[in-house]
Image 1 (tube, helix red, strand yellow):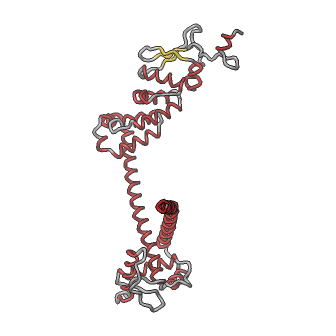
Image 2 (cartoon, rainbow, N blue to C red):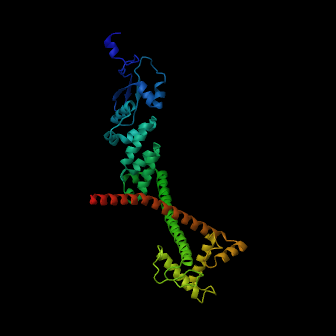
Image 3 (spheres, one colour):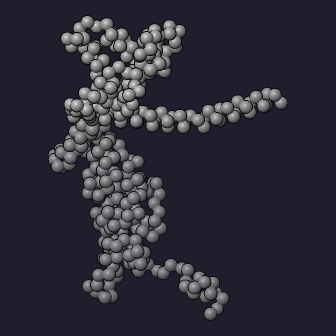
Length: 354
């Protein structure tokens, strides 16, 4: 082997030069794009199955027809099959056609690239067209993003030509969009209701803490239970004073209300419910200083609780647990920041001293 021939080969003795194209891609405009059959077969299983079919004429030129899309889009498609690269400009210009080609010829790498590129190009004007394409090409990410954009901007989408065309030609897809919007609205309502309920359960949990705090330690206007002590007028408000003050007002009213016996006072009924809820949550009734805690426990043991009350207790306990975890997480996040602040202060003082 001569030195010139050796230089044209790699270390294993194979030539580093690509062979001549052995197949022609024919487009709708009659353009002929040269390609390598081995590259096409390795990139697309559909093209591979086309290439292995026996030819009608043995000596005829190998060709594959890719019709129905612009010639330039086919050129970019063939280029991607050999290089797995596509520029932003090419995607912006031919993304829709490339998604269709990637779906038809099963090229997942290109389909993933198109899905990302088209999602970035989504607007109110093209949302309906993109939705139809995503459904035809089985692109769920683009489909969902289109649905969300249409749902959020429906009044604007209604005025587009794409929506008017959809109403006339694809009532099934129109129904899917309207159903998605209805479900999205229902989810929002459920979320808002859940947040309101969670807020209520957190407030009840906080009221339980305040009730226990008042009966054990006392607060600004109500002294601790069982000690026959008046509250200290100099005592500072606690950390949950807004809730605590409301509970104190309820306790003071409950202690003096004359309509309580007949059950005609709504404020007293609330106090009874708070005391009962505390008893349902309390796990130390023998040591608890909250009034009627043990009595409520005994009553439940004798007669049991109804399902609705049990559900309320469980939800308040759940809200209390979530609140505790959230507080613990905040403290952990604040600790490094506080340590950093202390370090910065020490560094500043050291600098000033020197």
